[in-house]
Length: 305
Image 1 (cartoon, rainbow, N blue to C red):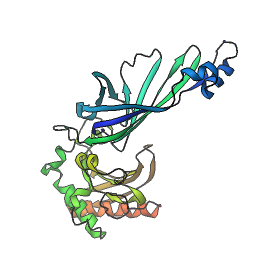
Image 2 (cartoon, one colour):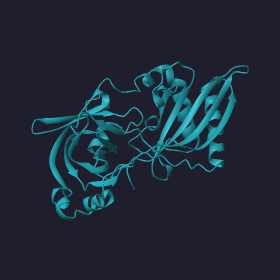
Image 3 (cartoon, rainbow, N blue to C red):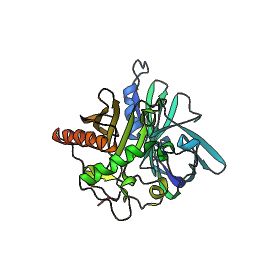
């Protein structure tokens, strides 16, 4: 989830301290209490929640890093290897401390500085709110470049037929192909290498599981705050080609984006190699998924109602 570039206001919040296990300092608990409650001299040195002014954000490495800068000073954040929405600051000059930022909806950041010092664990919340943003330059970074080739014509035809058969008509400004992506193997979902053995057809679902158009970064960065319906779940069809007899086996899953938890799954199968056979397997899998409680919503315009 790469952030938008532009100008942001940076906020720092109230710091909290807890006694670290094994702390031998006398009255350590009382010191932590005074720190958190801003009592006495401690209250004079703990900064109150406040704005730190405007910062510029520049996105690099296809969204894998961003840089915030103010007055000639800058700090680099690198994307976490385990969570694509989390970025970790490099060299914050605080011994034993770490600053992390989480990107929410491409245009808001929440984070914290945390660490251990003198036997106390501390947490210091921070945030950045957009003031003037724009789409970063992601030329050459699009992971759907392969999906635009004729290699996926079969899957695209089957998926458009799947939508039409269910009476799912796109909004006037969109085409059926704007609502899904065809991905090759698990590489596009989890970063593994392509081997051509399986393919996925992916839909993103928002509020009430409405299917969202695959809106690009430009629309995301230019949309008014609170207007975009953020994707909450994925509807994923994993396709296997079966031999003897030739056909398709399709696993349909509803996946929570935040946690990666599989909320529901079902399968469908068909005989034949034509697009109609694949469409039939997708329909069977979707019907079984709905019978298990998953709701597949309408095609939306990607905006909050």
